[in-house]
Length: 306
Image 1 (spheres, rainbow, N blue to C red):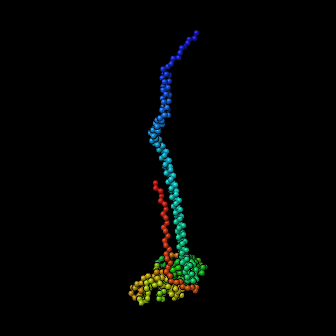
Image 2: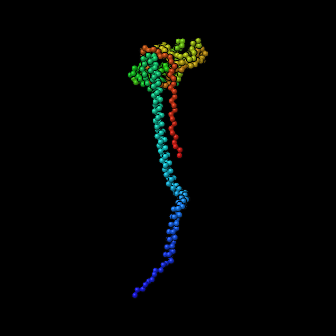
Image 3: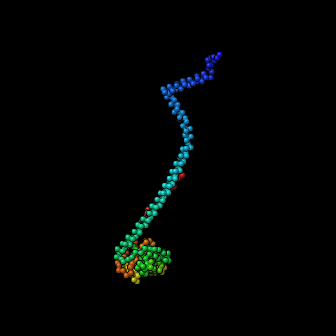
């Protein structure tokens, strides 16, 4: 015969758990209703978000620092590369500017030489300067033209300003010019103003007159031209201008300091008067004006600071 166990007894712990669950549900429903009507939970969430915002900022600081350093290094590398490229471009532009300036100077000098030929109707040949020797005791030019180009010893050499000197040595490819300022050179001259005959001597880096009688009509500023005496130089070519007069040591004669008419220390080309040519002498004109200086090259950009 089976026995009947009777009704199951309820344990106190299960009842308490059920009551807590019901209480939580009631509280949740109450909060939902209140939030729906007043929105105070939304405000609470906003306040909580503001409270934890510094924590988020602190947590993201290492990442932001790393990203900033990476961007900074990338920007500096880009600036350095751009600076290097700008420096290279500036150097190239300055080199081109220098080349153009030199070409302009050469062009102006060639125009001056051409003007001399046209004004004087001269029979000449153009010769480029290959080398120079302007020591006080040796005033010479070496030209890139020799006997193969028709150059002969004794030819007079001029530029746009006036007489430079004469050819003293010739090889098949080159020739050597003795300048007026060489200590071994002397040229018969006369004063264009009154025809007084004198002799101009070379002094290494300048010209001078010697043994000029006190009673001669010689003045500072007089222009001296070749006299044609001796047959070496045609008459009428400008030689120099008297810049100063002073008595010599004997006080019986005058010594004159001269400024050469030719540009002895500049130019890349000269003119050789052809031997036996019949030409109108070069008019006595002042030397060409100096070419104005070119603007200074721009300075390269500075390195970016760390």
